[in-house]
Image 1: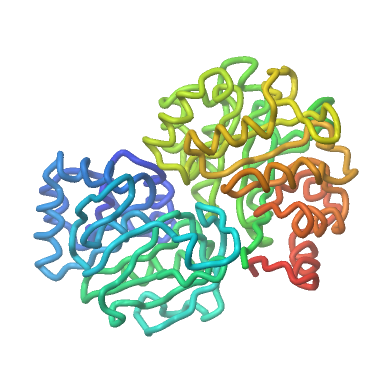
Image 2: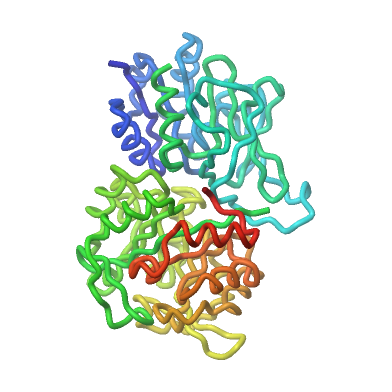
Length: 207
Length: 252
């Protein structure tokens, strides 16, 4: 039995994610215990909240170090939505904040300047992905499937090589999935994206 | 282009799905979970549970229904009605909700809105606004499921809620709700124009043309659908096919 840990930072819908994993017959634990994190086979950084609040929480429980150590071992990490953004070097949300620095790049607001039309934030809704690279998390997921997004900030990668997929919101190209070796991030919510979303979680947990 | 969401709105009283007209004269429809599951299987984009009497009786009976729903339904679930404290919101999220909607408590205590947004993130907090028409350009905010006037102007309140940090507006026309006579198009259009956050139009959809009109003319980001689904007048596929035919992008 694989040990899957969902990192708990007391924000948002961690239960929704755990319920999705249970449905797929994966047992998981929601925890902020450093030892359990280091001992896990896979960890998931879940979805919602504000970047600085989440980083402050991770730091206060000494989890930044634990997550980096876990990553060094080559074990898989999946960041979802805010969790994906935390993987980057830094974010501009409510001022400059350092991230986990596991994938090279930064986080900034979905800019109103890139598009001439008026855009509403957060970007909330279901969008099709444009795949840039094949990845095992997309196994059995049809190309045309839609995923549920809800976010105002976006990830920018220093290397195109790390981008797995993008989507388009009000004519703005936004990175939807990234990978650098064992570190994986998705901007959409697989736990809220219907049966195909579950396949992404299944692929991650089975790998 | 933006993609438009179809949201099944399920008004709950006690353990039952109910449906009324102008939020009154409630009729029991059945087990809310069974309706939600059916809509999920048919391709609805989101589920919205609204506890219609929670504010009146100071209780929240919805968490059990949410808990059952989140075990088998993997789309966003929003819960509203009777959320008065950070603790209430935490409990709803712990039951499996993805988003929280507040109305009465927000009007009584705007600081709570700020606190919820800071804690759970803007994208988790939906402001539910019940609007009653005063004249063609003016609407008043109501609370307690359309029972209590507040004296607040809808447009100003929507703008204030955006400043407080909410991520979405569920905008219900008390006048149109349950009538099947179409949305309050001007209301949706005004709120949509004056704010920079997504607006969910709610109340009054009686035909596919109503859907088309509120999306294309009032520019909402999402449409809440109740009667027309609960009474099986239309199914989700029919609405989505109609949307596609009319160049509205919806998820398939």
